[in-house]
Length: 260
View 1 (cartoon, rainbow, N blue to C red):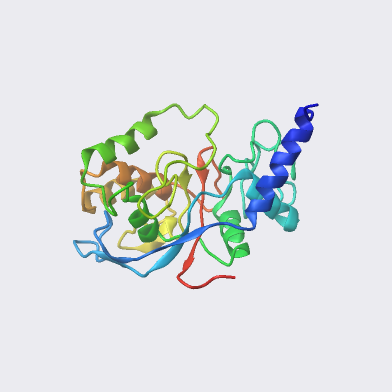
View 2 (cartoon, helix red, strand yellow):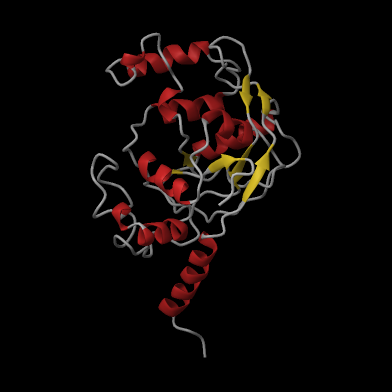
């Protein structure tokens, strides 16, 4: 006799939650990296220390387990200074996923504050932009595939897909570092999202001229042919830490050897 659908869904969720406490991190070597955002604002490469990165984005099931352990991050309790009104609005309830938020899908509609809190629960943090960009430059065989037009086309092809469809589950093909889904599933928060486009006067970052900075910042960026990465910077720079969107998730990072 087959289990009823709700029972089966409950079993799947229990399995997914059980794996939530065993998130996989893999080491990345760090090093000098030719970022689209030069370290000196001109041409200097970024210097990235070795770090460990979550192999997959955080899922609905994992974030559900988090809000059950930390109810202050449930959508009916989180203060508006930490998340906007759309926070986890795709879930059926404050601590229930429902049909529109499957356990293995990446969690979205999560603010930067909530993402940081989750990562701290794993003794980790959000990756910096340089860490994320370095990791995302890899493909299945190369640590930096960005000069390959096919790599760029794959990323841009994902950008062009309609965003109204249900997100696929995490677990795409692994890259050279055994990291999955850095490109092609969701946008991801980074720790320094609000410092990617910096004007000469930092007091202007949240002002009405922010879009002007985005355009001016793009002029100073390196690798202008890497339009796919520049689009991600523009998107992240348009956000506030309380913002949530239907296609914005996250993963965590931690220093090498810094395990719970």
